[in-house]
Image 1 (cartoon, one colour):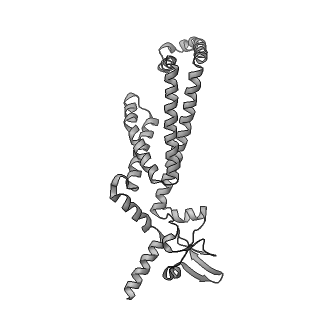
Image 2 (cartoon, one colour):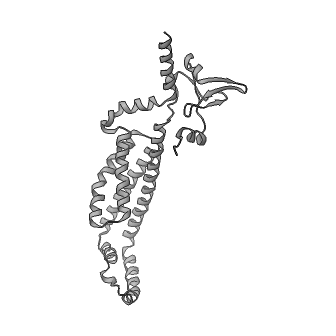
Image 3 (spheres, one colour):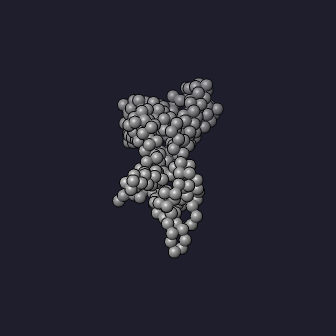
Length: 259
């Protein structure tokens, strides 16, 4: 079933109407009804009763996303939420590493006691805890220096900051955020591929696929790095989706035909 993004958004946020100074546009956007004047919504195109929300020259009218542009904005906001949630989890991981660096001896003592209690139980089920990869990885972290763990915590915080900044920028459809997302995500793709060669998991595969699709989608639909005509073609696409631009073109065409 095809989604009507324009009416869906208007139902959630309300309509956007505008009174342009240009007579030919005013006549095309206004209608008289038995209940009073109605103005055409710049997003969904339906006529709405009541006074317009704004007025002025057509060039100063709000550029209301509609159609494909509105759908792309929805996808960007989905990615924005994903980036923000990921950033929050990375912040929590950084805090965990920092706390661990300050309490490493206490954690190690607790871990050794816990392993000593579990060792007979594991031996009963024919599982060797002393040669467990998970246990070995945890024991290895106890050998890291305090300064090394602090560096890891700082790097995690920087990474989280980048993710959160990406999320905020994508939510507001900022072009710099789209560039930042593509560059930052693409930079980590080789590392994600390398991790898959070490150990395959569905989570790693899903993360890699989502990141590759995000890079391709944003770069192509937003025409970054000169792709598909670059910034000029992107701005032209946005303006061509504007209802006022459509009505302006229609008005010019009608006047030329009558002439």
